[in-house]
Image (cartoon, rainbow, N blue to C red; front, side, top):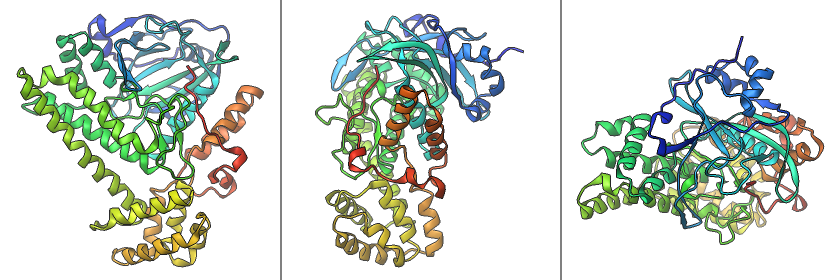
Length: 492
C-alpha cells in the first residue's frame, strides 16, 4: 500500500503572486538517515511506510505525494538591518499542509530540495552538517518545551554540494505551524499591494489568531497577539541560553515559533554579549540583544500593517505605536516570571528581579556556566549542604556565597518545602542542552566518517533534557578550553 499524506492545502489556494509552483529537483541516491517516528504519528502518517523506499523517495523530493501542491513561498526581509525586497524560499519547497492528531494545521516542507525562482544564483541544496544541526536543535527545543519548527526526517541525497569544499548533500523535512514570516508581509508592503496584505493578514488571522477575528479592530488585535507571542518566545530563549544568531525579519515566524536554525547555538559561560554566528560581526544578534531586535522586527511588521490599521495615516501610526509600546512590559513580565521559576520562587515580590539580576551579574563576572548554575541550584534548593557544587562553578566562590545568603532568605518566604521546590526547579532548569562542541562533534563524525551513532545518542539525550541521565552525564558538561567552538555558520 502506498504512503498516504492527508493533505489539506490552504496557502496554495491564495493568489499566484504569493508563491511559485514547482516540483523538487531529483537526487541520485536518496538514503534515510533518520525518521522522527513519533512526529510522523502525530501528523497521522504511517512511520513504517514513510521509512520504506517509496517514503524515502517522497522525503528526498524524488516523488511528489498525491495531494501535494509544491510551492516556494515569496517573502522579503531585513537582513542585518538592510532591506531586500525579494528573498523567498531559495532552497525549500512546501509540499502541503496536514491537520495533525490535535487538529492543528501543519506545513510539511522539504529544505535543500533544489533551486527555485528565489534562489538568487544559489544551488538550492543543503549540506549534511546544517541538516543534522537543525534536526538536533529543533528537536531539542521541542523537548525543552519551546514553540519551534520540528524535524520529521533527514535524508542523504547521494550527491555532493560545493561550499568551501565538497560536502555530502542532504534534505531535511521540516514541519511548522506555518512558514509565514514578518518578511512575507514586507514582500507585499514593498510592492504597495494592499490587497495582498489584506489577504495575507486575513489568512494568518484565520489560521493562527482566530480570536482576533472577533475584535472590532481585527488587524490591531492581530498585531497585539503577534507582539505578545514574540515577547513570550524571546523571553523563553533567554531562559535556556539560546542564541538564534540570525534574527532577520525573514527568520521571524508570524506563528510565534522558533524558525530557521542556521548559526544558532546555546551559551556555555554566561555573557550577554555572546555571539556565535560567523556572519554577525557586529554582535547585532548577540544573546542580550535579542529582545531589542525582536521589537525592531515587530516594528517592521507594524509598518506593513499601517494601511490595514486605519485609512487615516496618523491614526494608523498611533495604533501601531501603542501596540509596540506593550512589547517591553510583556517581555519583562515573561522574562522575570521565568527567572523566578528558575530560582524556585512561586510567589512574586518586588525585589525578585534584582535578586535574579545580581546572580546573572556574578555569573558573568565569574565565567560561570549558565545551564549548570541553574541545574545545580535546583539541587541546592533542597538544602545548603548542596551549595558546594554551585560554588565550584564560580572563579570566586565567595561571589556565590554572598548571593546565596539573600536567596535563602527569599526562599524562606515561600510556601513549599525543599523537596517540592527542587522538583519544580528541575522541571524548568534543564540538565542537558545541545552544547555546541557536542553538536559539532557528532556532525564531524557523520560528515567525515559516515558514522551516525553519535548523532543518535546525542538526540536521545536531548529528548529528555530535564531528567538526570547518570550514564550519559558527560553530555551535561561544558567544553574544555580546547573543545570550545567560537563560530557557527549558516550552511548556505
